Amino acid sequence: MWNGVLCGLLAGAMWGMVFIVPAFLTAFSPLEMACGRYLAYGVIAAGLLGRRLPPLLRRLDRSDVTAMVKHALAGNIVYYMLLALGVQLAGVSATSLIIGVLPITVTLMGQKDHGAVPLRQLAWPLLLVAAGIACINIDVFAHHGAAAEAGPTLLRKLLGVACATGALLCWTWYSVDNARYLKRNPHFSSGEWSALYGVSSGLIALVIALAALAVFHGDVTGAGAVASGRDWTVFWIVNAVLALGASVIGNHLWNIASRKVPLTLSGQLILFETLFALSYGFIYRQQWPRTLELAAMLLLVAGVMWSVRVHALDAALDAHPGD
Image (cartoon, rainbow, N blue to C red; front, side, top):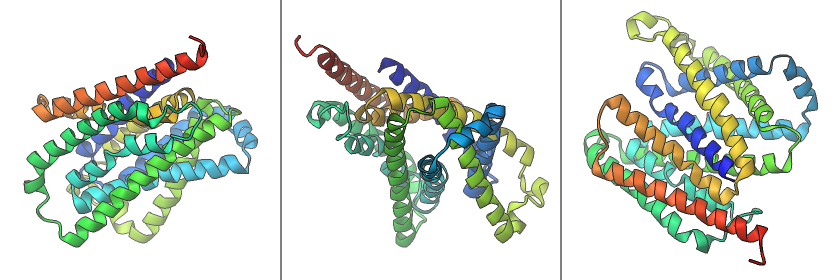
């Protein structure tokens, strides 16, 4: 289990990079960034597999293909697009408040799984996690809400909230279903499944990109890139780095964690993504965290570590029931 916790932490370190990439690619739309990232993910995954790809593809059955397509859509492309739309329509504050509930929703959905710790034993760790999430969002509202988000109308905000809620549901379902599928189907290793998942994500992104080019070719091809600041060389370099770090390495580590820890714990390990994203943001902006931000980070770490301890004690009791 501790190996799984370490893999979850390292996956969060990789995923945290996602939140600073828009600072480098402000001239590109969320659709372009999503397609670019997952196209690069698919190419890198296929390249890493090399000659092993055809035999792996022959081992796939219908349920494997169905699971990969559903997970690629829910956990990657649709999630990212809904999140981006939520930010555009409702603002960062409302969207982050909704997405911040993710660790709790995953934990609650995993209650009936094997190895799950009863919810009453996780009440206090979950309260610390909720307090940390509240601190983050109070700080966001206090420092960015009034100035940055006064513009959206009520209808736009409601649509944005609906998109953010959809993103939350997408990633909650993906995290739970992916973990269950990996535990039920050990015929692929975590690395093989991550690579196949990347190839399927890349193929879906290619279809979406070709459709976008056919409909919006005047805006998407990059015509006039120099004048508008749309540097496609930088675009592909950044997306390649993101695909390798956050998608290839991060997803592989998360698949290992999903196999080794109960769902009631893996949901809370997602908080490492938030912690690393905050840390990277402080480094990028060259500033120290404010009081509420620091309090949020400490509460999140305390909540996750407490939850890990509860699961470790529960596992020890299961291993030695007579003690």
